[in-house]
Length: 372
Image (cartoon, rainbow, N blue to C red):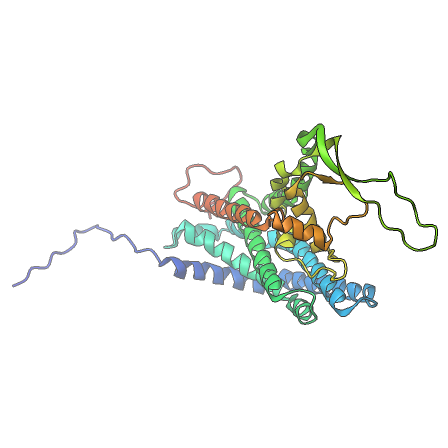
């Protein structure tokens, strides 16, 4: 004979939590369906298509006389540049109202009272906003595919560009989720998210420029200069041989950008451009599209001042001989891995803030904040 122990009257069972990824998928699915029902999303999508392909059409008319590879490289650079710019404008609107908007509509309290954990709510909101942002990025895929087939970019660079764009966009969406959890009103969360992005896109390069005087040193350095002592210009109408370069020790004021170049790794344009530029001009080995120009700038800043200083006008700064010499000395090092780490830390930190703010019970509420 077996005895069954009955539960005492008034006892309650602790409900089991929903499996983590099942809860995340539920929140993300609800968020995406809610976005698709709104007419604002359709208008934003239409404006995105017009802006991206409008810039592509203008680039087509401006580069009709260029070679196929040069035109494809310029198409690739302009498209990535425009897509990243528009992503910086659209991504905050997709994520900055995710939590503050639900709080204002009285929906957030229902989610917090369910079996979903704060981490599931925050990650689900972030994933829904990120998937929506990736949908916008996919619209530019035909142009990028043509640039790859026409030889304007390699398959590896294009794959790294897509990965970098996805990472930067995901980090921006996470920042929006974190700011949305901190603020009580939708307008405040959107505005604060744009302020953070403004600092990353504009403030970081400005801070780099303002700190340049702090890195300057004045003293004797080795300099390569043209020796004009015995050089005579050609009088026969043919091109004269350039004067030889000789090394001299001279007093120079040198700016050591290798000390503060890391400030530029917070800029999204620098991260994307350094990771995946288009093909350079094969005749001069110089970049002919915006991403390549930004890449040369950040890598030059990371190299900083290297002796001897080259002041010979007969030598190119980006020619094949200079590029090979820099690579042999280990000076042409990428900066995008530092940007990857920066944006990964920003995104993870923002999600951690959102999870902490979604925990219940809430001890203190901001003025004007509603529970349900």
